[in-house]
Length: 68
Image 1 (cartoon, helix red, strand yellow):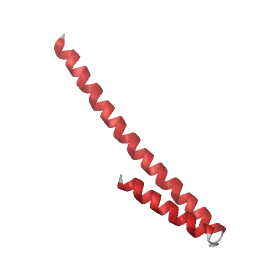
Image 2: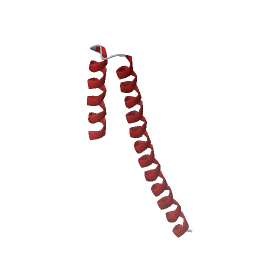
Image 3: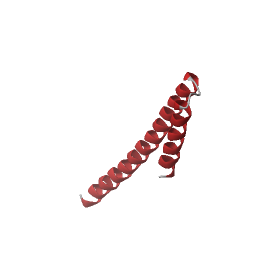
Image 4: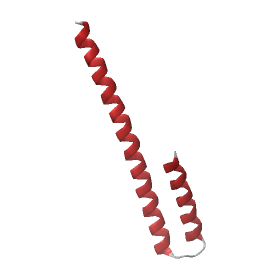
């Protein structure tokens, strides 16, 4: 959850900086940073879900093997 809060805080700070006339480069940098943060967060979530599913599948497979 701290990742989300950090990302949100950073995004809002970047947006306010760019809207106060810090220029196009600042705006572009802010957008790139937001995309990086979002991608990194999504990858972490996806990896975690994949691991949980893999673990769960192997447990089910093992149970099936034992029950035969």
